[in-house]
Image (cartoon, rainbow, N blue to C red):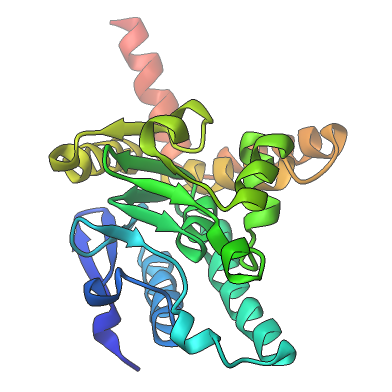
Length: 255
């Protein structure tokens, strides 16, 4: 496996994963996907890690899409297998026990946007650009773009982006609620790591249960979602962090 295509840095309770193919604008290929799954597993299994941050090497791209050279000669079955491999990555990000934040520096197109959509939060630099331009290649988004994007920004707006292949800037992405925050390019990582640090200071069990409750809840009917939330709420009371947190709160109130 090409270990260098995705880098891993451990910064306290934060795992920083960096797409590292700057010569190809960090385009996704099989080696990137395999390495990314391996590193996500490593972060998920590390009890010291509470938040994962994904970003791209350099300041030109988060991920500018899939590697077209790898895809162009595929037949229908090979293309289907390619999409299934991408789904394994987005499923891994979506179902990770820890919150995942995308720090989007530059182009976030095609598969790059689909991977960002699987993250819990998206933070963009002012020079970030977003789009699903697959239609310009005679194909469609195959890594979840036609499904996750409308769930995030609404069906009509998502259809417009998919049907036109238009690329939008960070300001428009914020307006559409595609990203949580936009910062100057030079401040992106500092602001993202500060947010990740605030989240990482919270209860690990609560973080995992909140993510699970919200992800699963938005995929089912309200009654089932509310009952699942109740189960997650109850599980919090089996943790040492709940005991300590409530005891500390009561102690402060008494003083």
